[in-house]
Amino acid sequence: MTKKPSKKVATKKSSGAGSSTIWGGRFDAGPSSLMEDINASIAFDKRLYAQDLAGSRAHTEMLAATGIISGADSKAILGGLDSIAQEIESGDFAFSAALEDIHMNIENRLSELIGDTAGRLHTARSRNDQVATDFRLWVRGAIDGLDGALMGLQETLISIAKTNAATIMPGFTHLQSAQPVTLGHHMLAYVEMFGRDRGRFMDARARLNECPLGSAALAGTSFPIDRKKTATALGFDRPMANSIDGVSDRDFAVEFLAAAAITSVHLSRIAEEIVLWSSVQFGFVQLSDAFSSGSSIMPQKRNPDAAELVRGKSGRVFGALNALLVQMKGLPLAYGKDMQEDKEPVFDAADTLAICIAAMNGMLAEASFDGTRMKAAAGAGFATATDLADWLVRELGLPFRRAHHVTGELVKLAEDKGCGLEELTLADMQAVEGDITKGVFDVLGVDNSVASRTSEGGTAPANVKAAAAAARKRYLS
Ligand code: ARG
Image (cartoon, rainbow, N blue to C red; front, top):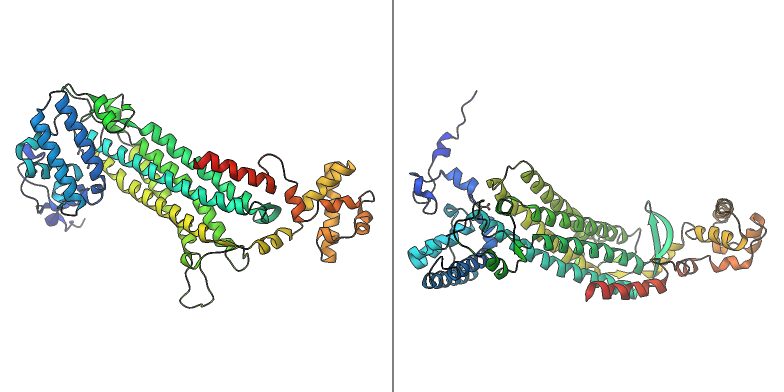
């Protein structure tokens, strides 16, 4: 076996001074630089600074209200926290990897600003309940942001639907022309999907909105804290019922990522349709210049890069969900440092989803749909054959199987003549089924076909108009 050459590096001391001032009481030496590299989370968890400050303020006020710390100490701590907020927001705060994470960076700065009193802030608290609280607050904020963004996307889709309640396009199954539908109906399908996505985020929000603060390390605390007070101050519905659960679980983050993953599936499907529809072969839609890119070699190209990226980025969100599930599944209760790995996937998924929703919204808002091309394509491939079969059943009383067969023969006839079903003559029709009357032409052709689909949730323009108005009420108010 060859000896690992890294030993020397591994024992090198970190640049940080001696043993940690925060937890270093029983340590003689500081961490190795590699320990610092693997242990520090400040590079990413500084994003929790506002939540961490809010948690510390609520905790400080509670400690003073319960008499655990003095009013004067509370005032000093709150003043220090305000200064830190300003320093971070103005970019003057010096984040340090030697201080591991956002919690210790802030606490250390507090002690620089107000001296020993800073040490009272961490009374009856552990980083375990602190980080669980911060992260819940962050995910809650992310949910609220994404909900607003999804609502904006729904608004764009609903307005396209309203304008295009009667714009005919082919409806597909197996990506083969199936039956004509309207563009408005197709857009409203996505409005429903994004509506359920918003529902999933809101369900997750309702479950996550309990406060872990006061769970301390895992067992609770011997101090007479008031958990209801901190929970209320932070906008939580109530304190979490069990201190071990409070610091152990990250199911709220998993739920967030699951909802994000499903939303990404929906975004990816509409993105894929934009990619297809904007091709020369389909020609259903043209993206605005602002959402297209050219090719460096082929001057004629107009590429739907933003749609492709929305489709592609879904993979990152699925990966984030998978990463967190795997991180959590083997952890014994309560806290394990593995859980520090929960943040990056959640941050990345939230950022990815936000940019994808915004890009999709922008693309759709500026897209121009080609109603003429869509209508022509809707008529191709004998798309109203089902209407013909239904007419034979309804008007002539044929059993559906027989009607299906007769229609098949008529499709073959039209195919041989190189025309559409509606272009066959009555004599052509009667040669196949003698009882057919000229009334059949009322259901042939895409306009008639679409107008006849008046069943609840169907594609008739009148339905789509009403559905767009109903969706506006349901989702945008
Ligand atoms: N940075 C840590 C995390 O994100 C904070 C909690 C540390 N707790 C501890 N017992 N070491 O999980």
